[in-house]
Amino acid sequence: MPKLCFTKRAVQAARCEDGKKRTVYADTTVAGLTLEVRETGGKTYYVRYTDQYGAQRNYKIGDATSVALNVARDLTVDIRSKVAAGEDPFAEKDEKRATPTLDAFFEGQYIPFAQSNKKSWKNDVYRYKHHIQPPLGSRRLDTITTADIVTIHNGLKRNGYAEGTANQVLFLIRHLFNLVIKWKIAGITQNPATEVGLLRENHKRERFLSKEEVARLNDALKVSSNPFLYYIVSFLLLTGARKQEALRAAWDDFDFEQAFWLIPETKSGRPRAIPISDHLRQLIDSLPSRGKSDWLFPNPKTGLPYASIFFAWDTARKQAGLANVRLHDLRHSFASFLVNSGRSIYEVQKLLGHAHISTTERYAHLSNQTLASAVSAAGDFVELDENHKWGNIHIGPKRALSPRTVIKSQVMEER
Image (tube, rainbow, N blue to C red; front, side, top):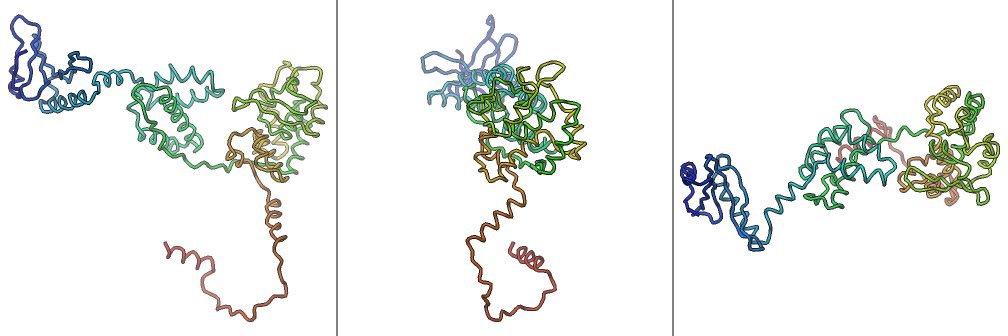
């Protein structure tokens, strides 16, 4: 191999030897830096080294017309230092090539996994296609940064999406990268979504029915064109079940000897048992479908569970003056009934089938009367002496400002 003191002018002047397709020159200044000159005139920098197995390797740096000589020399020193430390530059390059795009991972590995392990996998596909794929789908996993994810997360909020929607998208991205790490996908060791904070969600939409509203609703349900609507709504209020759990309730799922209803398939994917109360048993015993159908609430036209009851429900709630009440609010109301009756939040959690107590707390509405009773309970422990007097207490003259204004100004001064 001919040697050459590489300079900018020497590299430009280097030629392929006559009769050869290529000639490789070795730099006399930096060991391991070589220049391949081809008969076509093309020139490429390489790093030559011996790997841990004693084999001679050539690591391509780049075209000599694009890579400056000083950069080529720095890279050569860096690569040979890594080799001396036991690292393999080719392994790093192969790993980079093996790192898939987010699209490739989602389509090729995540969807098959989710279809087998997650009931709501179609929701993930929707969120990915609409919110994640457009900015990140074509990117390789190792190029996606925390800043990219923050941009998506905050952008959803700016574009008018609810905080909950933005957080669900963030949860999906976190989940995807957690699986990437768990499955040891090449090139990824950290989750870029971990440090992205959740948006604070506003749950003001929660709606709870009062006893008077339930009575009004029942009157409207009894005259509904849907013969099962009264039974379905009453069933939801007595069990706290989700709409689809109720509509798909089958007689085989009820154990009347042990007095429980087994919901075989829930939102979480796990079965859940709900005790049969006296009121629920009374409702079930009155169902016209008993002994005539496999389902508690069969559609008379098809004999199968209802696909939708929205029209009948919408008509009834408007007639009752409760147009803003959703079917899911019956589940909220069930939790409210329990808590206001003195049942613990942990009992409510179990009956609603929530994995985390924080989810149940959203539904645990306490009526003003219940809160007033709770405060009054403190009086049972405090005895007041109505005859007690503390001499003459001097009260200063009225201030020009109201007490609230004075306190507020003091707080502002302290800040």
